[in-house]
Image (cartoon, rainbow, N blue to C red; front, side, top):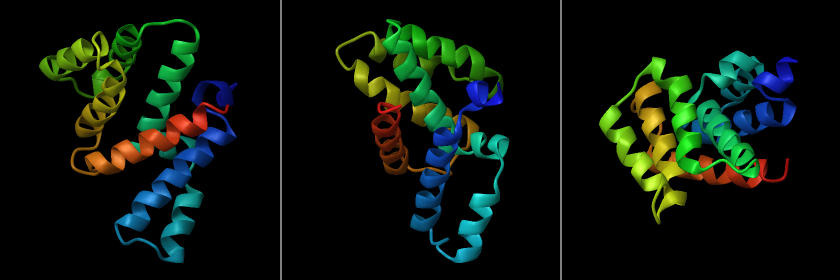
Length: 142
């Protein structure tokens, strides 16, 4: 049951891979750092910036496959996550984007918005977008 709710093996492997990539970019490329990432449990991995990105992307992809509109998907995700922090003005801009011609860009904007609230200053825009792209490509094959 927990695999269904919190993500299976592939999801945890993807989060680990993305976390290792970010750590390597930041200079943590030694064996000790990589071993620490491998020892993280599911809840610890889900609590990382990469865990947030993968979870958001996975929810968007699965919900869109079921016919949900992007603005309603992001609103639903925000309702679950806003206890961790919320900026109503910035979120309204993202919802407007999700409802317009730049809908695809709203997922990246939303991921970066959440990371800035939940993990301020830990991930750059470039790192976020790279992790988002890699997540979307991988999750699309699940």
